Length: 252
Image (cartoon, rainbow, N blue to C red; front, side, top):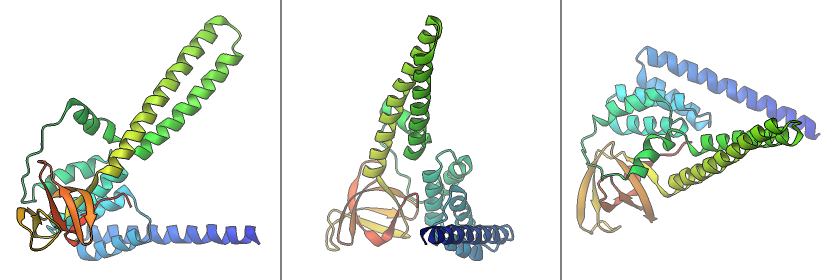
């Protein structure tokens, strides 16, 4: 009975994936024919089925960009890069999309470590770094076995040195993975979807306005109280914004 249920589950998942792929293909055809709103509707159906990919989010970003919808285009390009930081097309189009945003916020100066983290380490997601950990773990174990069974001193020295190096790189990759995971958990990014919104100094409508943001601006979400989000922008300013006026960026 269990085997039968497992077989049914496999068949259902296969049919589900085929349906999602068919929808994705149909949406691409609509996009090519400039039927952008219809394409977006079908892309969103694929997203709702949970069959997400960097390419899917990239196509959604392109569709919204062609419709001059700044917030959604930036949002989906960012999501594409969350899934695949090496998606150069999404990164390049994101630059053009950001030029449509009204807010020109000057970023705080970054330390050398922050620059290395952004320009090098964050080119891979923490899931991809986790894969590197597995690779180094397997490689280090294999080389240690070769060292153990080697017959000559020269081979033993070689395998010992290389296996030790592999384990050192394993620890280094583990530290990077943990750092990237912690960064992702502690820096919840979001995009402003409201055409214009006032950021206040407290989570109430009668509190003072501290600055104004416009559609497409990226913010960091620090805290949540009721229907309000505490945010930080690139220049370090803090404030509270109505939660419904931003949309959190995540990979799924």
